[in-house]
Amino acid sequence: MPVRLLASAAAMLALSSAPAAAQGRWLASYPEVQNPMHEGMRNILQLDGMLEEMAESMNQAFRLPRDVTFELAECDTPTATYDPGRSAIRICYELLTELGDREDGMDSGEPASFQNAFAFMLMHQVGHAVIDVLQLDVGLPMEEAADQFVVVMVGLAPGELDHLVDGVVLLHDLELDWETPETGATVLDGGRLAKLTCLIYGGNPEAHANMVEQGELTASRATSCIGEFADVQARWTALLESHLNQG
Ligand SMILES: [Zn+2]
Image 1: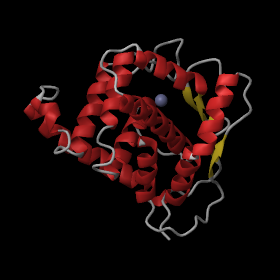
Image 2: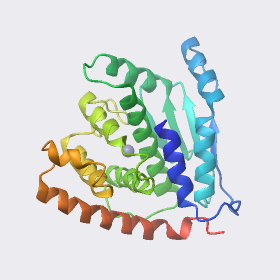
Image 3: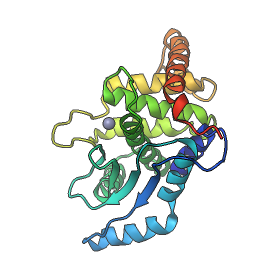
């Protein structure tokens, strides 16, 4: 599933499989839950080991000054957030349920889009975590920077993550605000969708030629997206360079 492919993208960042000589580690955590339905999901997801795989790939890729936790939790709100105070990415069971429910209510929803939407949200939070823990000077609004991190990761696994854009489009269509559900401030609106789809296209124009054919991108815009992706990739390569394991 796409989250596994994102893990492989993280692994590609690692220039060597040598163990990290770092103080911090990426960790997976499954706090106790009360709701029996969440307990069922917790058992399945813990057995699946997806978060552990993700954490291990990130450990191979990045040297960290402190631990960062991937946490699946019961939260009362359908959210996926990063808490800088605890250095924890928290994915709520309520969000997984809400995403599934909302997608069920749509005519055109495909099961793969759910997984791609989840993968996008998870990786976006990894972006927040990386920026915070590594104290990266991104020079951008935080939401845009975290989105760019996802795009750069997608660019590392061409061919494997081509369908992540379906998840981005689904999140836009669902108007699901997974970070601040009360305010609607970070819902994936049209402007954010346009930036993301442009960069995803620019990272792999051949795989996304249908965007131009279907009129989602004009031919001239598509050409500039290729240059914009190259600029974003170069900036992030420079930002991350000194934090990668190099054997
Ligand atoms: Zn965010």
